[in-house]
Length: 395
Image (tube, rainbow, N blue to C red; front, top):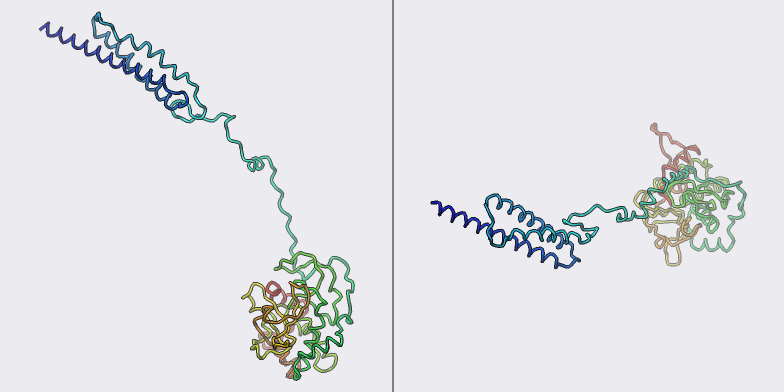
């Protein structure tokens, strides 16, 4: 029995020695392999170092347990002395300089102050630049025009006089049976051709030449790219129509051919803007159009840029001619209706009733109060009506 136990103890020692030898050989092989790797790949070197150190720790622990269980080492060479080179060889790979970006162990190191990315120039400016001062609020204009200096006369009634040659040309394009009222509308419309600039929100009920025309003023009406700019004062498209009708009434009334009507009443019946003038007129066919009727681009609020003019005759090809105050040409001009962009022909109720010879108090077109009586606007009310009726719609 004692012999069996002794044999069993010898076998345990031999097996233990064999295991220690195998582990020692494995450790030395790994160390030699790690030392032969190129220094340019820190990830592989670091992996070899950690594996060597981990295996070396096991190799150092095993001999301690062996000494506790074995009474004496055998005369054979002890492989337990082999781990000593492992302890000295392991730190060598660790001495390899580690890159800043990728330190040993595969973890990303925190960047130092020198390696922090530079802050974009815009962000640097945001940090160092003081807050911008608030933008100055632009003045809001709510009046037709702000004149910059004393108004001086740029012309007079003689400026509106038509030459004999002009009158002869106008007579050629007018129908023979045209009523005196329509004929006067055409003459008043032609008297401003080429003489008055375009001015957004420009209105006038002046009899004859308005001395404000041509004087420098700031465009005070909102709703246009011209708002706030400085221009020579004149008329906009609906202002041109209004002036022509007011002066027709003044001329024929002064001659006793029609009953006199106050300018405010005329303004109320003609309308200040394109919207008001559209409401004060009725649609007719192009074939029915006569000089003195109105031409529009479109119905109010259906076109981003509405425009109105006065039909003054037909050219040699029978096409309608329209006199209008053009923003693009900055003056009163005469154009062919279709080519200019006019699409609707409408007859003013004022013109229709005047042709019938009705007295002013029975004329249609004025707004009615709830009791059915006609309501005529004061000059202040007419101005307010201009804002409501299309200063932001008419050209």
